[in-house]
Image (cartoon, rainbow, N blue to C red; front, side, top):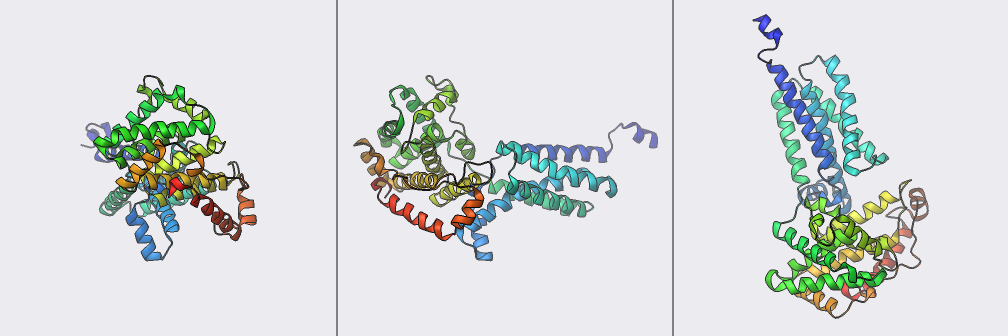
Length: 397
């Protein structure tokens, strides 16, 4: 009998277990690389509500905390699964391997998911999650039931917290709208006039289709289409969809959308047009408060060394885009009113206020020292000015 075991035929149960759990580690790692990181957009309401109730936190802080907890949970599970893979090895062998491999895999997953090497705060999250996960897994490695329960609960929470998507009919409508826009892109001028022309073109198409689908639905599809074409195609990762721009007859690929995007301006700036439409489309996929949180988070990331710096002008465009979606999709009456307004002519002042004399490109240290961060007196004063300017935009009311 001992000879048969040593020959490896049939395969020993412990070997099968190692291959099984090793496969789980690989599958989970790939999932973390591909699943959109649950930034503030992805935090589920139950998690945000629980943090607010238990810890008495404000909504933005609770949402950020829930987001960090979800991503940390996903990264921590790498260590737990690795501990299961090496549970049959002596602790003196398993511990060093698991404790070293877990943070390496966690950081690698972040790197691939983000498309850039994690910044210090993200790196700290990866390490702070993976190492405790590894220690927890090592401490429970002799209890199959406890480990199994932990893995099931963690996977369930993470999967539920990152679950996003759009219905099939909205996906198809947004794709059809994107196709129509790009087929007519040759007639779109450059600059702010191009922004106005595309808004008119897209919402006229939405109005024509509102008789079958309803105005709110048609406007949501229009905003999603422009979010990808003029904002950023990675927006569709949040919706876990593709608008299949590669199948568009006149575009052939995403190159058509990117070429058009480079020509369009808002208040004379291409980045403001992108901010407007990314925030507008994220508001379709979530809600206005989450979309604004995403905009603020992005600006804070830019304020980190190596980024473009904190920009109050970008925040104006972020908020304008969010308010536009709210006004265009609040209910059928407001949706049809937006379509009529746009059909009668687009005046940029009604959709985004001027951004003159608003500070841009502020490095992180300067933003903290000179402005007091997000809660600073100087920041609050500028935000109040931004709100005043936004209040003058008739289309955003």
